[in-house]
Amino acid sequence: MTGTTHRPMGVSIVAILILLTGIGLLVRGILGLVQGGEGAAGMVVAVILLVVGLVYALVAKGIWNGNGLSRIVVTILTAIAIIGSVIALSEPGEMLASIIQIVIALVILALLYGRQAREYFA
Image (cartoon, rainbow, N blue to C red; front, side):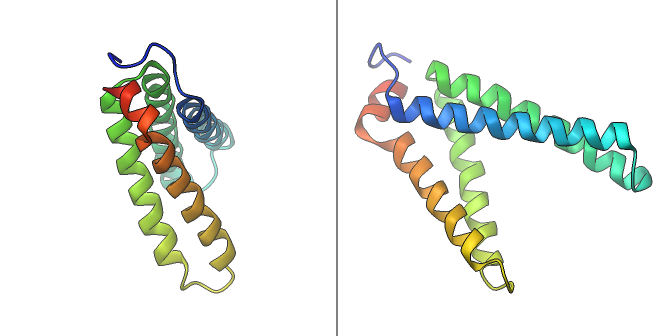
């Protein structure tokens, strides 16, 4: 962060949302390892959840601190989420959840690329 000296509220909100997502993934991974269900495949999924959860937590810290690379990682993860949600639109019963996920993803991108955020990450 070389731009503004204070973190915009929108960036703080995004960092907190990303951290909460990371914590959720970590908890799911830990529960998967502890419960040990579904054999080796379940263990692999649990480890992947732990790794992805840790990445989310690290990226959240980077967003909080104004790290541009973290902003790029969030942009890529958000784009992947949008693509997944668009694909899920065709599944029965998933339309509302998919639309909500797309809206949230677009809000995250708007918060990360608004004028104040651009100055913060400059």
